[in-house]
Length: 261
Image (cartoon, helix red, strand yellow):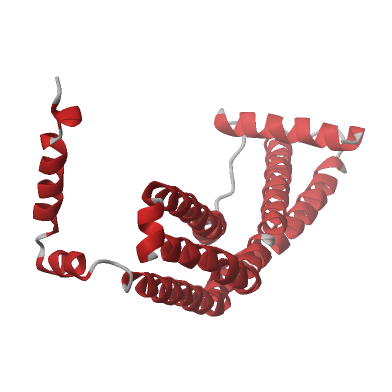
């Protein structure tokens, strides 16, 4: 920060302190304040959407990675029994294909149609916040000059040219502030209104990508189902699977090595 910039920062901080003490009157613009609050709400929602959109892709990868690990573990657990009926090997292959083909084929389109558009939208926020910050600084400058004019009116200076000169500076400060204030008051609502038509294509792409993933995952798991014991499928459909599980557990408990105390 330059020396001039440092002095301005210190000066504006002093003005804020004096405002809190009631020594300088603060200019309020209700219309602008409403629009800035709306922008803050949208900014927070967009930043959260950016985070969650990235999290969704990470979650898909994590889920398929977990499926890969559990498939490998189940295949090892079944051992020769799984090799004979092919169920554990089929499940492992289906999960491997889901990870190698489906997830990787969705990664590029998801980034292009969902992540990148959201990232580009959020990339405007730093510039807008910089403009808001500048507007607030110019408002402080204007309020300070107004206070100086009021002070000279209430208590005239020995130099008669000081009041007109200060009034001119106050008018210039007002024009700079009002130009920024009007720009933000006009353009923030336009930005907020554009959020929906901008996001609509990405939202549609997100739904289609989720549909494709779910459909392909269902299709691959349905292929595995043919290797499952028909009796097991029937018992599951009729809600009797718990009884079979309990029966097998009882058989385990009946074993001497399991029932020994």
